[in-house]
Image (cartoon, rainbow over all chains, first blue to last red; front, side, top):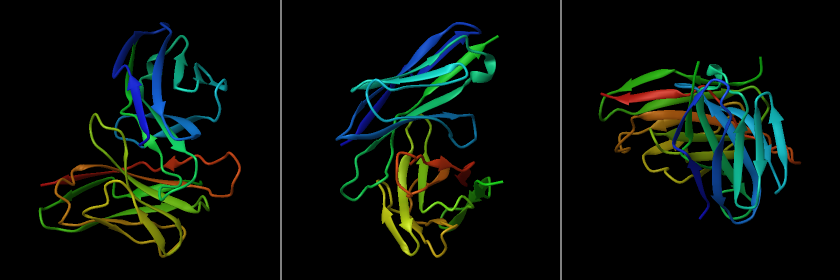
Length: 114
Length: 115
Protein backbone atom coordinates (compact mmCIF):
# COMPACT_ATOMS: atom_id res chain seq x y z
CA UNK A 1 0.00 0.00 0.00
CA UNK A 2 1.29 3.44 -0.93
CA UNK A 3 2.06 5.69 2.03
CA UNK A 4 3.01 9.35 2.42
CA UNK A 5 4.17 10.97 5.67
CA UNK A 6 4.80 14.69 5.99
CA UNK A 7 6.80 16.40 8.72
CA UNK A 8 6.60 18.50 10.70
CA UNK A 9 2.83 18.69 11.19
CA UNK A 10 3.15 22.42 11.84
CA UNK A 11 6.00 24.88 11.35
CA UNK A 12 6.24 28.46 12.58
CA UNK A 13 8.86 30.73 11.01
CA UNK A 14 9.83 34.34 11.25
CA UNK A 15 9.77 36.30 8.02
CA UNK A 16 13.06 35.67 6.24
CA UNK A 17 13.86 32.48 8.20
CA UNK A 18 14.49 29.74 5.63
CA UNK A 19 13.48 26.13 6.32
CA UNK A 20 12.39 22.85 4.73
CA UNK A 21 9.32 20.63 4.76
CA UNK A 22 9.72 16.87 4.41
CA UNK A 23 7.63 14.31 2.53
CA UNK A 24 8.61 10.65 3.00
CA UNK A 25 6.96 8.09 0.77
CA UNK A 26 6.71 4.41 -0.05
CA UNK A 27 5.20 3.52 -3.38
CA UNK A 28 5.33 0.57 -5.75
CA UNK A 29 7.01 2.38 -8.61
CA UNK A 30 6.82 6.17 -8.54
CA UNK A 31 4.92 7.75 -11.41
CA UNK A 32 5.13 11.26 -9.94
CA UNK A 33 5.35 13.23 -6.70
CA UNK A 34 3.20 16.32 -6.41
CA UNK A 35 3.30 19.36 -4.15
CA UNK A 36 0.24 21.51 -3.57
CA UNK A 37 -0.46 24.62 -1.51
CA UNK A 38 -3.83 24.93 0.24
CA UNK A 39 -5.20 28.08 1.85
CA UNK A 40 -7.91 27.75 4.53
CA UNK A 41 -11.31 26.90 3.06
CA UNK A 42 -9.97 26.60 -0.50
CA UNK A 43 -8.97 23.86 -2.89
CA UNK A 44 -5.33 22.80 -3.27
CA UNK A 45 -3.27 24.82 -5.74
CA UNK A 46 -0.72 22.93 -7.80
CA UNK A 47 2.94 23.82 -7.24
CA UNK A 48 5.29 21.14 -8.61
CA UNK A 49 5.55 17.68 -10.11
CA UNK A 50 8.75 15.65 -9.70
CA UNK A 51 9.31 12.42 -11.60
CA UNK A 52 12.75 11.02 -10.80
CA UNK A 53 15.38 11.09 -8.06
CA UNK A 54 17.68 14.06 -8.38
CA UNK A 55 15.09 16.27 -10.03
CA UNK A 56 14.64 19.81 -8.70
CA UNK A 57 12.07 22.51 -9.51
CA UNK A 58 11.82 26.12 -8.36
CA UNK A 59 9.12 28.75 -8.19
CA UNK A 60 9.79 32.08 -6.52
CA UNK A 61 10.84 31.29 -2.92
CA UNK A 62 10.03 27.58 -3.21
CA UNK A 63 12.29 24.76 -4.36
CA UNK A 64 11.27 21.10 -4.46
CA UNK A 65 13.75 18.23 -4.55
CA UNK A 66 13.31 14.47 -4.84
CA UNK A 67 15.24 11.40 -3.69
CA UNK A 68 14.22 7.74 -3.90
CA UNK A 69 12.58 7.90 -0.47
CA UNK A 70 11.60 11.51 0.19
CA UNK A 71 11.01 14.97 -1.15
CA UNK A 72 11.83 18.32 0.39
CA UNK A 73 10.13 21.63 -0.12
CA UNK A 74 12.67 24.33 0.67
CA UNK A 75 11.36 27.80 1.50
CA UNK A 76 13.90 30.58 1.17
CA UNK A 77 13.33 33.87 3.00
CA UNK A 78 9.61 33.25 3.49
CA UNK A 79 7.01 35.99 3.66
CA UNK A 80 3.72 36.02 5.60
CA UNK A 81 1.84 35.32 2.35
CA UNK A 82 3.59 31.94 2.17
CA UNK A 83 1.51 30.85 5.17
CA UNK A 84 -0.63 27.88 4.09
CA UNK A 85 -0.90 24.11 4.34
CA UNK A 86 1.48 22.33 1.99
CA UNK A 87 0.36 18.94 0.71
CA UNK A 88 2.48 16.19 -0.79
CA UNK A 89 1.04 13.35 -2.89
CA UNK A 90 2.39 10.42 -4.89
CA UNK A 91 1.08 8.49 -7.85
CA UNK A 92 2.18 4.92 -8.47
CA UNK A 93 2.82 3.52 -11.92
CA UNK A 94 -0.29 2.49 -13.85
CA UNK A 95 -1.82 -0.87 -13.04
CA UNK A 96 -4.52 -2.41 -10.90
CA UNK A 97 -7.80 -0.64 -10.33
CA UNK A 98 -6.57 2.74 -9.11
CA UNK A 99 -4.95 4.25 -12.15
CA UNK A 100 -4.32 7.94 -11.60
CA UNK A 101 -5.04 7.79 -7.90
CA UNK A 102 -3.05 10.16 -5.72
CA UNK A 103 -2.08 9.17 -2.18
CA UNK A 104 -1.80 12.27 0.00
CA UNK A 105 0.09 13.05 3.17
CA UNK A 106 -1.69 14.86 5.99
CA UNK A 107 0.01 18.16 5.18
CA UNK A 108 2.31 20.62 6.93
CA UNK A 109 0.75 23.82 8.26
CA UNK A 110 3.22 26.66 7.69
CA UNK A 111 2.84 29.97 9.53
CA UNK A 112 5.19 32.84 8.73
CA UNK A 113 5.18 35.71 11.21
CA UNK A 114 6.14 39.26 10.14
CA UNK B 1 -11.55 31.45 -17.75
CA UNK B 2 -10.75 27.73 -17.76
CA UNK B 3 -11.17 25.89 -14.52
CA UNK B 4 -13.16 23.74 -12.17
CA UNK B 5 -16.25 25.01 -10.39
CA UNK B 6 -17.99 23.44 -7.44
CA UNK B 7 -21.33 24.39 -5.99
CA UNK B 8 -22.58 25.19 -3.53
CA UNK B 9 -19.68 26.49 -1.43
CA UNK B 10 -21.52 25.62 1.78
CA UNK B 11 -24.20 22.97 2.20
CA UNK B 12 -26.22 21.99 5.22
CA UNK B 13 -28.00 18.68 5.41
CA UNK B 14 -30.43 17.21 7.86
CA UNK B 15 -29.89 13.63 8.92
CA UNK B 16 -31.61 11.20 6.56
CA UNK B 17 -31.42 13.50 3.54
CA UNK B 18 -29.56 12.91 0.31
CA UNK B 19 -27.66 15.88 -1.11
CA UNK B 20 -25.87 16.39 -4.42
CA UNK B 21 -22.65 18.33 -4.87
CA UNK B 22 -21.94 19.79 -8.29
CA UNK B 23 -18.59 19.73 -10.11
CA UNK B 24 -18.09 21.20 -13.59
CA UNK B 25 -14.87 21.65 -15.59
CA UNK B 26 -14.17 23.42 -18.88
CA UNK B 27 -10.59 22.21 -19.21
CA UNK B 28 -11.56 19.38 -21.60
CA UNK B 29 -10.08 16.93 -19.10
CA UNK B 30 -10.96 13.26 -19.43
CA UNK B 31 -10.65 12.14 -15.82
CA UNK B 32 -12.49 13.53 -12.82
CA UNK B 33 -12.15 12.74 -9.13
CA UNK B 34 -13.94 13.30 -5.82
CA UNK B 35 -11.99 13.56 -2.57
CA UNK B 36 -13.00 14.07 1.01
CA UNK B 37 -10.84 16.11 3.42
CA UNK B 38 -11.12 15.87 7.19
CA UNK B 39 -9.05 17.91 9.69
CA UNK B 40 -5.60 16.42 10.26
CA UNK B 41 -6.04 13.80 7.54
CA UNK B 42 -4.89 13.57 3.98
CA UNK B 43 -7.34 13.75 1.10
CA UNK B 44 -9.14 10.45 0.57
CA UNK B 45 -10.50 9.31 -2.78
CA UNK B 46 -14.24 8.66 -2.98
CA UNK B 47 -14.88 8.00 -6.71
CA UNK B 48 -13.15 8.64 -10.00
CA UNK B 49 -14.09 8.54 -13.66
CA UNK B 50 -11.82 8.33 -16.69
CA UNK B 51 -14.51 8.42 -19.36
CA UNK B 52 -18.15 9.35 -19.80
CA UNK B 53 -20.61 6.76 -18.47
CA UNK B 54 -17.90 4.95 -16.51
CA UNK B 55 -16.65 5.43 -12.96
CA UNK B 56 -14.79 3.47 -10.28
CA UNK B 57 -14.96 3.34 -6.49
CA UNK B 58 -12.13 4.86 -4.55
CA UNK B 59 -11.05 4.07 -1.01
CA UNK B 60 -14.15 5.36 0.80
CA UNK B 61 -17.09 5.00 -1.63
CA UNK B 62 -19.63 3.65 0.87
CA UNK B 63 -22.56 6.02 1.28
CA UNK B 64 -21.74 7.98 -1.88
CA UNK B 65 -22.85 7.77 -5.52
CA UNK B 66 -21.79 9.52 -8.73
CA UNK B 67 -22.72 9.83 -12.38
CA UNK B 68 -20.78 10.90 -15.47
CA UNK B 69 -23.27 11.65 -18.23
CA UNK B 70 -21.20 14.49 -19.71
CA UNK B 71 -17.45 14.95 -19.97
CA UNK B 72 -17.69 18.31 -18.19
CA UNK B 73 -19.74 17.20 -15.19
CA UNK B 74 -19.23 14.77 -12.32
CA UNK B 75 -21.84 15.26 -9.56
CA UNK B 76 -21.50 13.53 -6.20
CA UNK B 77 -24.51 12.45 -4.13
CA UNK B 78 -24.03 12.00 -0.41
CA UNK B 79 -26.71 9.55 0.67
CA UNK B 80 -28.28 9.00 4.05
CA UNK B 81 -26.20 5.81 4.29
CA UNK B 82 -23.03 7.87 4.79
CA UNK B 83 -22.49 7.74 8.56
CA UNK B 84 -20.30 10.79 9.00
CA UNK B 85 -20.71 13.10 6.00
CA UNK B 86 -19.56 16.36 7.57
CA UNK B 87 -16.36 17.22 5.69
CA UNK B 88 -14.77 19.36 2.97
CA UNK B 89 -15.36 17.83 -0.47
CA UNK B 90 -12.96 18.45 -3.33
CA UNK B 91 -13.40 17.72 -7.02
CA UNK B 92 -10.40 17.38 -9.31
CA UNK B 93 -9.76 16.73 -12.98
CA UNK B 94 -6.85 15.57 -15.11
CA UNK B 95 -5.98 15.22 -18.75
CA UNK B 96 -5.24 11.70 -20.01
CA UNK B 97 -3.55 12.98 -23.13
CA UNK B 98 -0.34 11.24 -22.17
CA UNK B 99 3.20 12.34 -21.55
CA UNK B 100 4.38 13.59 -18.19
CA UNK B 101 1.77 16.30 -17.84
CA UNK B 102 -0.71 14.42 -15.69
CA UNK B 103 -1.36 16.79 -12.86
CA UNK B 104 -4.68 16.80 -11.05
CA UNK B 105 -6.21 20.25 -10.68
CA UNK B 106 -8.68 20.97 -7.92
CA UNK B 107 -11.86 22.96 -7.59
CA UNK B 108 -12.57 25.36 -4.71
CA UNK B 109 -14.43 22.78 -2.60
CA UNK B 110 -17.80 22.35 -0.92
CA UNK B 111 -18.12 22.28 2.85
CA UNK B 112 -20.92 19.95 3.91
CA UNK B 113 -22.31 20.10 7.43
CA UNK B 114 -24.87 17.70 8.83
CA UNK B 115 -27.25 19.35 11.29
